[in-house]
Structure formats: structure tokens, C-alpha cells
Length: 340
Image (tube, rainbow, N blue to C red):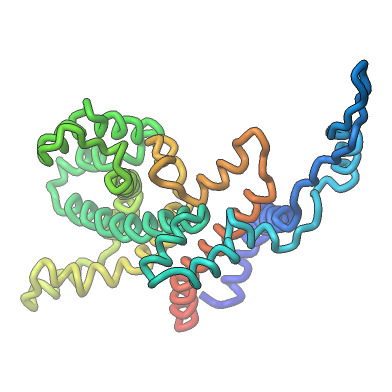
């Protein structure tokens, strides 16, 4: 495609993205640079039969007037990013100086809320994304090979995890892994430990969340790969068969290269979705064992005191993380486009 044709093709989408996405990002970045005003405290003298005492009280009128005058809050610059709930610059320096080695330093980082959430988010993304691609491709190849009469029912059952509402699907698995559920009881029988509980074990809970992530996302990869398999040149496949290529060699040297653009597309979507992991943690009530960046944002906004600046700073760091994750794929795609 010519550069001019590509420009006019993406122009409407670019304008809509600027209106509905870029403006929101600018708003979040701006909010992250301000912090909430402190309450105006005044001293009040209370006099009674036994004398006068001085007490401190919140001046509601002055506090409200200050908030009305500066609705964004007090200018904080990058202080919100550097505090203990985010990058924790001072805590990281202290941990680096006082730690005995990298394992000790890593343990110290895990005690900081942002790095704890970042560790789970990156682990979830790094494991669920490739497994989703592999499982989706395997399902597509398998279904593409079955008899025509069986393809309809097989496709329907393969899409069930994608059709079922995420909350319902995760709750079904949540009940199954309960100590009284079929999976929970099975794990207790296999391990020989009647007290084993997925919900009480951090490692098992992480595995369960990642299993659910793959189970829920694989049908999307399957649909895309299955559509791509219908476009594979059959003459090339037959030529490879005549040359004596095995089934695996035909898949490796013909099918996989043909589907590489689709793999890039699925990888981009999955990287963005998995880095924003949120619903499984809520559905599994796993906040005590797994905390993602999205959960951190939700916690800042869901408490009695909404921490807008903290949520905005975490959102900006999440956007930066997504951009870093996507950059290798986007650079590779741009280079491939330039070659054309």
C-alpha cells in the first residue's frame, strides 16, 4: 500500500483517537501532577465553667473555598510518582544499599505496592499471552482438520469460553476450585493434603488466574487463526506434500509464516488486554494474593477517600508499560511495512 493511501485510510481513525483517547490521556497526565488540598485546620478556644481549652478543628468553609479556587488540587509535579505507593524512589535506594544481593533486593521490592502489582502484571502477561497464541493456533489447526460434519459443533464448544460472560465463567471456575468443588477436591486427593486450598495459596491462585486467562482468551486467537487457515494456498500445501514434507513441516514452513501477520495482530491485542488484567482478580476474590496495576487504580478510586492523583499516576505508568510492551511488535510491523 502506498504511503498516501495508508495516510488517508487511517486518518478518520486517527482523528477519532485524538478526540476520544488522546484527550483522556492528557487529562489523566495533568491530574497526576496535582495532589488534593489539605484541610484547613484552625484553632478554636472552648470556654466553660472550668476554664478555656484550645482545640483544633477543620475549617470547612475555607477548605471548600480552596478546593473551588483550585479544583485540580495543589501542584505536586512528579512527587506523586516518586512516593511510596508508586515508584518509591527513596525506598528503592534504601533497599539497594541495605540488601545483601539481588534476591534480597527483589524481596524488598515486593514489599512495595507498585512493584508488587507490576510483578504480577508482568508475570501474567508473559505467561498468558504466548500460551493463548499457542493454544488458539493448536485448536484452529485441529478443527480445520476434522470432518466437515463435526466442524459446526466443535467450533461452538471451542467458542464457549469466549461467549460466556467473563464474570460468570470465572465464578464457575471459582466454585470448582473451592475445597468442596470438583477441582479443589481433586487437588486435595492428588496431593494427599486434605487442607490444601487454592484460595489460601498464593502460588496456586496465580496459576489459577493464568489458567483462566488462557481459557478465556484462547477462543479469540482460535477464531482469528481459523479464518487465516482458510486463506492458506492449497497448491503450496500440495507441493510440499509431493516433496515429502510431513504434517509438522508443512505447518512450520508454510502455515506459520503465512499466519505471521495474524499472530502479530493477536499478540498486540493480548498484550494490551493481559497488561490490564482486572476481572479475574475481582471474580476470584484474589486481591489478597494477586494485585495488578488495574486493581491498584480501582483501589485508589473505590475507597471512602478517592485518591484521584494516585490513580492518575498509576494509570500513566500503566500506559507507559503498555507502550514499552508493544514497541517491539510495532517496530517490527513498521519495518515490514517499509519493506513493502
